[in-house]
Image 1 (cartoon, helix red, strand yellow):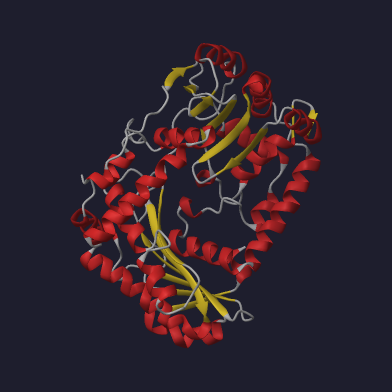
Image 2 (spheres, rainbow, N blue to C red):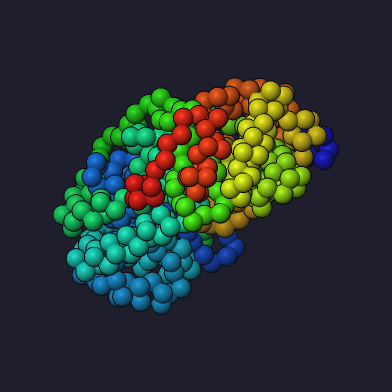
Length: 446
């Protein structure tokens, strides 16, 4: 390692793991000097496992936990939380349902008790259900009106097809309209339980005291799944080699997404791919920015990214341009991927990006919330215990040759899907050369 890449060891506070009798695992990280605490309760049960016809139920139920529990109204809960300067709420992603809390340490115990009420005694009031339904339907409509959000939605559908990773976390119009209070009660009873849950507490804490408090609040929690649900294997992009156009006739610009299979989280090539992708399209000095924005003025932005989940992952190149320039944009994007796949990054590019990634990494751990999230990721994805402390070391150990090998192994050749959002009548003859063209209406993705 060159002197320019010498780094101080990344020191983390001690991380103590304990388990309650009901199976709930505690991850306790004392961290000063600020009198603040972040709490994250992570339960495996996100949108991947939403049943057919009930897409979005995980996120819907998680958000409603805050809207009435233990006989207290949403306003009463908000008043109690706001009074002590705390933040408390729920959400779901593809694989987890999460309750998160941040507060001053002197108010931690009563806020943990309130978190327990939300988790164990949700009321799911009909009035709040209907309000949340209207808000969710409005958000869905906004997504169908927004070209960028529409491109992401269409891209996910084209990539994943019917695979569970293709479930929209927000849901679909028909499924949100169909959700009932009984569905939410059943979700809470069958999908949330202590055996697959982890409670992360980071900040100004006493480990023994928090263990006692957590046992008192969560120790009687029962039910839920006993075994982690399995995500089925993925055969690759559903619409391989196709071009999907979402017809927005009024658009003079085109949103473009090019998708392909990627890798799952924790893959052995994670670090070479991270360095390689930073060179290709992961930063403002990337090749895609240089070729698309700086040299040709086709767009203000262009990027590439890997989305890595437990059992599979994707790779995407994204940008936008005027309708008349779409062929140039696609050609340049495909050419840059091909060039990277053939030769990889130069040593200068790789070393520059290694310094960039390493320099930014500690900032990702500065807050208690960020550290709790990083530790939760290590647990959820089964990553090595030293994943965080040695992350920069592993990045800096990547050579240009290793990054090139990873690019050759994992970047697409012809196995890709192209999604465009724009005027289909104008776009169809332009892009037919890239594959079979299908045109869909925005409402078909709702």
